Image 1 (cartoon, one colour):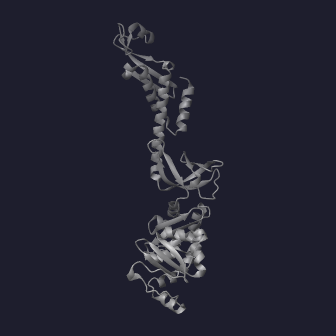
Image 2 (cartoon, rainbow, N blue to C red):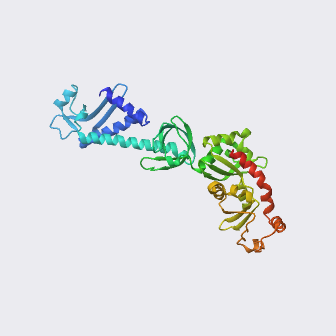
Length: 399
C-alpha cells in the first residue's frame, strides 16, 4: 500500500480529533467487514494488518492446505499453496494476500460507510463527554468567523467548532474574528445523532455565572443570588442576600474600586446592572427592586395572585416605570409580583384580605390625613427609610 493511504488516514484522524491507533482499529474493522462480504464462508479466516511505521496494509485470507479439490475458499490446493509459500504442506495454513481493488464497489462503499459511521460515533461521544459537564455553565470561546448578513458566529472551544446564532447574541454587540467571549451553554440537542451545543449570551443565567466567577463570596455560598431579571444589552437586576451578617452582599458584588462589577459589565458590552438587596418581606423586596426610584409604600393586594401596588412620589413615577416600562418589567420579573405603580396623588386599592385592608374613604385626603395614613401603615416606614440608600447602591452598580 502506498504512502498516500497513511497520509489520508493521518489527515482523517486529525480532522476528527481521533488518535491514530483508534483510526487504525476502525479501518481494520471496516476492511474486515468488506472482506467478509466477498468471502462470507471465511469470516473466521480473514485478518487485516495495518502498520503505519512500516507502511504495511494487507488483508490476508488464511487457507488450509489440502491435496484434493478445495471445498471452498477456506481451503487451497497444495500445488497452488506452494506458489505462495514454497514450504507449504498438506494440513498447514497458508496466508494469501487479497487484492483490495477486486473487492468491488459495494464492498468498498460498505467499508467507507462503516468508517464514517464509526467516526460519527466517536465524535458524538467525544462531544457529549466534553460538554455534558458544561451544560448550564459558561465557557470561554474564540470567534473564528462571523457570517455576513445573518450574523451567526462560528466559535472554537477546545478544538471543537460551535455556533452562536444571531438571536442568542447581545443586541447591538459586534463580534469580530479573534475575539474571546464567554457564552452560556443552555443545553445539548440531538444527543443520539450529531449533538448540537446550544449557546447563548442573552440568557439571564449568564449574568449569574459571571458573578460566580468574579465574586468569591457568591462562589463559596456566603452571598446567594436569589433571582435575576434581564433585558440583554440594556439592563439587568440581580437580587443578592448575605448569609453572613459581617459580609455586605452589595459591596462584595461591586468589589474593591468597583473591579468586580466593572469586569462583568465589560464582558456584557456595557450592559447596566442593578444590584438589589433581597428581603423576605415582599413589600420591602419590591420597593428595593424598583430602584433607582424612591418608593413610599408597597401594598400587597393579593398574595396568592402575587399582585401589589407601589406608591412613588409624582416626580419619581417615570423613573419607577422606566423607559418603555423597562424598570417596572425587570422589577416584576425579579420579584415574581405584578406591580401596579401609582403616584402618591392616586388612590391605593384595598387589599383582597379584609383583615389587612385599611379603612379608606372616597374623599381625597388632605396632606395631614395622608401623613397619618402613611405612618400607620405597617410597611410604610421601612420602605420609605431604605429607598434612598438602595437608590445609591443601584446607581453605583449601574454606572
